[in-house]
Image 1 (cartoon, helix red, strand yellow):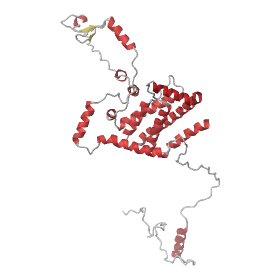
Image 2 (image 1 turned 135 degrees about the vertical axis):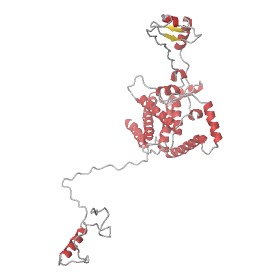
Image 3 (image 1 turned 180 degrees about the vertical axis):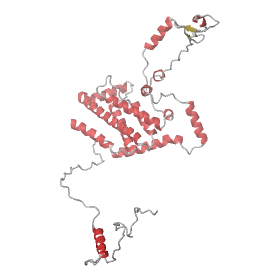
Image 4 (image 1 turned 45 degrees about the vertical axis):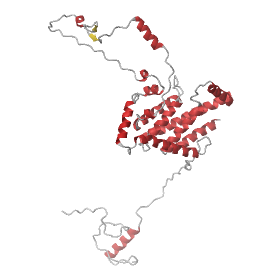
Length: 380
């Protein structure tokens, strides 16, 4: 049985510009296109019909009887930012070049072109000097770890489960029925169960209990924040770096919550050093979800910048620049290390913002930073 359906593209006309008007069944006269006479028969009439049909448009537009006014949209905003408080273009360009060089230098230690024996030696060194770090999904443990708290705080030892011996059944047995007779090296309980105890372990005396209690209640020495060293960063891969950057975004947002009691502490310079180092571990080509993570980090830094600028402005209004300078000079003379000044935190925040925008091409975030600075100017 012949297939009578026509396929798309089958046409009686050779010229593709002239669409086909159905399969030709009846004969059509072969007249010139300039024919302007009265058709003498059916073939000539069909010729004029097909010729006029080719001249008609395929789509006809009718005026809308109920016109709707088109809203006037503002012109598109330029990506070029001009606020004087933003980092200059020259600084951004130079900073981006130096950060890219840092990324290349940090990745060169694991270059594929190195001989295989160097890779084996490097792996052996990392295994020899491997530093214990918290579990990746334990966010609070990472906060304590970065703060420099002892390992017992962020990695507490798990208490071993007590080994309990099952009760014997009520069947016949050829030994004493008293459960205490089975207490070779264990401690009997009221239920007749026996908890095993290591041989040679003696119970603590009251004096030892007092010493342990005093040791726990004594204040801990001041903690020194953990600095990102090459050995630590060598244990952090791309996925781990992105996960930790998500933690920093959360901590910044928690600090910005106004009604939080008690208020969440602000990130220190050591934390910003970690963010800087972790960004150097992130690949240049990342997924959309990871890019959204970095954009959230940038917006959090912009919001933190706004708070710091407002605090700096209010402090200058109350005490003046001279008082601040005297305080800094006094701390330097006493040999104290001044950390977390507003200028240092602001500079670190601008670096993080510039890295995300420059390395991963998120130039529209400069407009968010400019809007933040403009809002401060309008508030004045």
